[in-house]
Length: 343
Image (cartoon, rainbow, N blue to C red):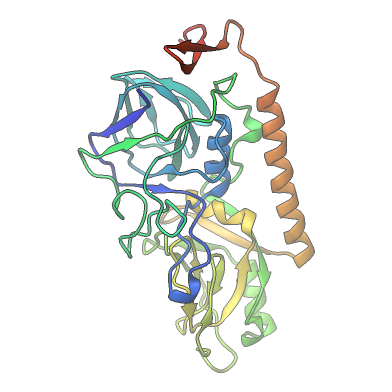
């Protein structure tokens, strides 16, 4: 039997997400998707999945999940105090779930973590994505967060990886902590602010407001002032855009952000740094670092190089006493793994 997870305690907010639903901004549909694409992608890599298959995004206080069947799973992201049958389970690694195993999250220092299953989370795609858009009640598992009694199924795994365990620390998300430096490009409406206001934006430390969610993070600090008009003719916005409303407190648009807006955008967070917001909670502090377009492109190349290094490392791993066999029973071929039990 392929692996399924029965939800006991649902936790605070657990949703099915992949890398997002793109191409529908013209009809007002946001991309949604995971808050940290790096953590979700690496969790999938550990299981032999493609980067974009669906995972569970777990926020703050996680669920209690009982395994039905068996299979390989992986955790990547913040430390939410994961336990397997009551025993602490380190993040940033993969592990086996056997029939009846109970995976729980007592909460911890992290804000979000990602649970991947070999074969991915198998829900019906909506507009080519399994991401949950909560405000639109669309996609994921019935368009909503998980509730008690829900049954989550893994898809068909392409094959079992030859290794499971904890990834080296150099591959963990290096973007956690209560203070963050986040890289951003000026604009597209930076000319709505004079030099002093732009310097204030990049030099001061901002605090994350309690009024922050997957749609956007509101920041608190010394108010910014527009040169003249406080609004623009609404235009398209995207994840990472930093709007400055008339009251001068910036809003960073994130996964579930609307697709248009009428506030000037003083800067835009570069893609590889968007995942840092997944680990920021109310009261945490951050600063923005101005970077050039070329630096933003290099950051993207660096991210891709990190993915390649992880895949190369995983491909080179073997586990002593671990073997994969293909057996045929009455004409049906099964892949069977035989290995030492992990303590």
